[in-house]
Image (cartoon, rainbow, N blue to C red; front, side, top):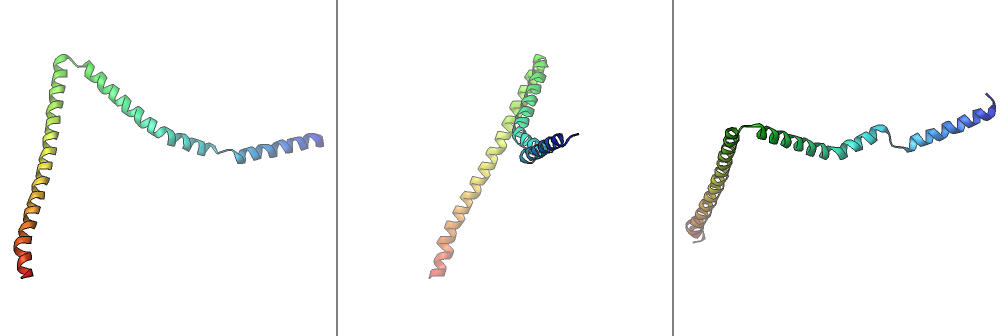
Length: 114
């Protein structure tokens, strides 16, 4: 090889090294892709799951569909009943707390101020 070819190769090699140093690494590019695609993967997984459930439901015979709907309604009402009982219990505790506080203020606070 002549010296001119050597110099051309050297300059080309240095140029390529600069480009590699300035460009993001493959790992960084893959990490960025994964970060942006993670919500897409989650939504795609959810969509696939819902489609498979819908296909399963559509493949059921009519009595099976009716049974699934009835069970779903029963479970829904059961959850609603549980939530309403929880709210009712919290309201009862709050009312009891207010009544006890008022009784405390009437009887105990007055005696200590006398």
